[in-house]
Structures are given as C-alpha cells and as structure tokens.
Image 1 (cartoon, rainbow, N blue to C red):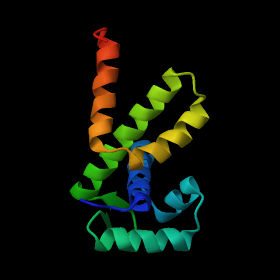
Image 2: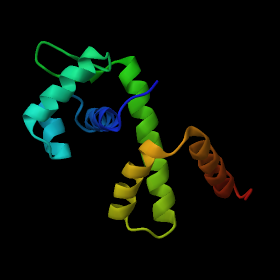
Image 3: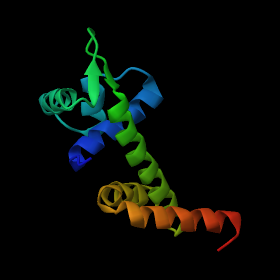
Length: 126
C-alpha cells in the first residue's frame, strides 16, 4: 500500500496524541505539528475519505484499523531509528529529526536488517 509521507506523519501524530491524551482533535494535531487548522482540516478530510481515520459527532478523530497499522509501523520505525542514532551518540533532538526523515524513505528490507542487527547487539550475538 502506497501512502504519502505527509499522510504517514499525520497518522503517526494521531497515534502519539491518542497515547498521550486519549481523544484527538484537529487543533491538537495543528498545535503539535505547527500547521494551520485549515491545513489539518483538509488533511483529515482526505484521510477520512481514504479510510484511515473516522470522526465522531464531536469531531474527535480516531484511527481506523487500516490507519492504525500504518501509524504503528511508522511509529515503530521512528522509535527504533531514534534509539539507534542516540546509541551512536547523536543528540536526542537531532536523532528525533533524522529518524523522522529516514523512517519514510528506508526500504522494508533495510529496516528489517537494521532491526535484526540491533536485536543481535542487544542479545550479545553480534
């Protein structure tokens, strides 16, 4: 399934906000990403049309199963890459920014090999 990087970022942000706050509103996404509310409204409309999010009668945003799978995949990649970079001595702020850039462009094959390598290092096999 092909999805644009910006959509992945929105889905990941919704997941993170849900974990932190439970309910998610468009304004929460706008504030956390530093975007305008109209930009977020347009993005949420597209994500809703594509079946990634639903909005209830109070305009609270939730991920669909389809949206959650993508969000969790991107979030896992982000956290893994961020931890790896921090382990190399990169500052947390830079590691977070770089992980956000890399998570979208790294192939599944490369990410799986990196994850396998990290698991082996952590278990003392490497």
